Amino acid sequence: MFYVKTVPALKRARADIHFKRLVLNRAVRCTVTSSSTAQTEHDGVRSRGGSECPGLSGRGGRRREGTAAAAANEISVDFEQTREAYKSKDSLELLRSLVVFKLCSYDFLVDKNKEVMDLAKKILGQKTFDQFMKMTFYGQFVAGEDHNDIKPLIQKNHSYGVGSVLDYSVEEDISQEEAERKEMDSCVSAAEKENIGKDHRERKYQAHKQFSDRRGGVTGARTYFYADEAKCDQHMETFIKCIKASGGSSMDGFSAIKMTALGRPQFLLQFSEVLVKWRRFFTFLASQQGKDGLEALEQRLELTQLQEFMTKLGANGDFYGWFTGRKEDSTGCIDMLDWNSLIDDRTKISDLLVVPNVELGKLEPLLGKFTVEEDQQMKRMLQRVDVLAKHALESGVRLMVDAEQTYFQPAISRLTLEMQRTYNGEKPVIFNTYQCYLKEAYDNVTMDVELSRREGWHFAAKLVRGAYMYQERERAKEIGYEDPINPDYESTNRMYHRMNELGLIPTENKVYFGQLLGMCDQISFPLGQAGFPVYKYVPYGPVNEVMPYLSRRAQENRGFMKGAQKERELLWKELKRRLASGELLYKPVY
Image (cartoon, rainbow, N blue to C red):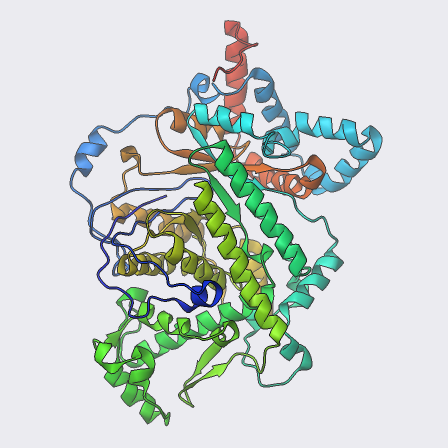
């Protein structure tokens, strides 16, 4: 996770964001400083920098003075020293890791893991099966059944320099048919069902039956399907318990949530389409002024030229006033951030879902009409998100909003940004997630960093590779839109490596690392014991209800363990060392 402390250069003319005003009837607070953070799925960076905002023009800031001195004093971490790497584990835990990782490398067991577990449950009975799972897969990847069970593991990890990101990992185990039915029902509006014919929808942001089971091809992320508003309230209560458990277990914990658990996904689809169309329209207008090919924040629209261009198209209306609100407040140019702010000025939630019409020179609704219930469902989603943010702030917990599919993500990111505006004024509380395998990742990060600089709040983020690559590519190919994923591994790497331009030095203790519980301990604990900030993503929940999560872990680890033998080699090395030195009965002290 990286921090960049900056001084806001510009306050928004309309700081009372209508998202929150509608839900909370209060204005967003702005403060005099902002900072930024990010965390990767397996490794991440976090820093606190100088007063210059990197990424202002999409290129990042200058390296700070003192970099050479910091490099000279860097801490050396030896990941081959198994005694230090596994100091937090007893020998049985090491043996369990070896057994689990080995089993995860067998295709038959992984492909048929659900059937194997169901058979074992029938043979052993529920109680014995639960005990067996706690001794093997569950014990390896899950911290415990409830917030009391997980405290010993969290405290042990903390004593060895590793913090926790709590995640209540209970998932619905539903059939593909039920998943498809729920998704199609919840992603299609009443207007679309009536086939009014006045809607301006793109296929990417519509539900398609062949991709309606969003679990397909996804092993690294949990999936929620909308049932009703009561179920969303239950999910909210579950997240609240997780936040409280995190606050009661450690002083600097994180908790993770998913936006699709908190409301009808129809709204996320529609709002995402609106946001993308607004951004695309801006890019089109910039190209008309000869500014195509520039990075997102370098593009500026001259409003006088814009007015002339739109008039030539035959459009009516005062576009100068449309984009600035008041002529006297305008500098004569706007950038993408000014452009995006236009969407805030709506009086009710469904009014957010409007798109610009070039020919007519006016805003048109994305859909022909909205029912009262649809408008209320949108409002309740925002209210649930706000409740969780309040609980996180009160509990001293940092809240991570997970990334999801690209047809949901623009809306998820925008709603998360609205929470950051409200709750990140004095310290980073709400963390957005950026998927670095996306082509647009760098532009998204730099624009949000710049927005936080202008408005004076703490930008906070988690950087991940992304969990939906195969599903996203197949959907784009079948439905017929551009593949949103980077073409190769190196392209994704470049999204991460641009942090070097920000002058972020790991040895300054401004870099945060994170791994999943039960994986890569040989990386996590040496870093933590060397003084680096390190976190484990800690799932918990009843044995029988986390089976879908464990199934995904097995599938995810198969590829990981086939491609890398290093962790098993180090585990064997440490067991042999303990046997030879008479430390086989070693117990961690904390």
